[in-house]
Image 1 (cartoon, helix red, strand yellow):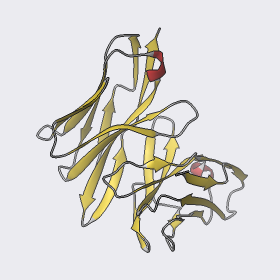
Image 2 (tube, one colour):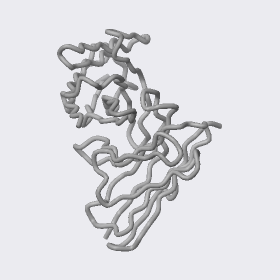
Image 3 (cartoon, chains in turn purple, cyan):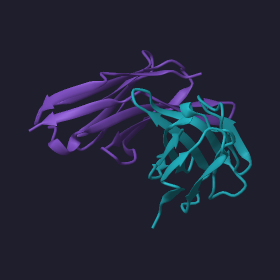
Image 4 (tube, chains in turn purple, orange):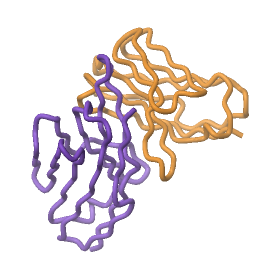
Length: 114
Length: 112
């Protein structure tokens, strides 16, 4: 099955700095890589995603890069703000025999210090 | 309003007493999934369903059952709960396994 590793587990940055979270996956058949943000006490919500036929995607201050050869993908947040403080999860969706199974990383707690 | 609902939101039960957590979505999504969230372990998929009557095991299916008789509903059944099933459970739905998943509000379960 798929294995997703996520680093770091915690990250503190000064407001205005950039934050980078990295994930690796094990199965080359994975073809969809979403990132979810979970604020304290709330449900996870998608912030950005990337498909296996794309190398990079941007949405305002957030970007995701995918390196299929190395099997890793990263979330980049620029100009961080206090409201970016949350737990971020990466995930990989694996196509296996027509079924699509999703495996999440263990999460990164991001703290943005004002 | 497009949403995923779960019930109950909080549940305290005892070992061995069968329980069901309901999940319903009103977005006509085909793909539905159950996750459990535990500190340090992230979100782990329990079961998922590609469509009505089509389900498959996720990474941690032991001790759980699911059914998908209708498109909008995907209940999670614990036939004989044990303390190691104490966790925060999320239901999610999407148009497909490669699409945005919309999560329910979560069900916090404590098994004594």
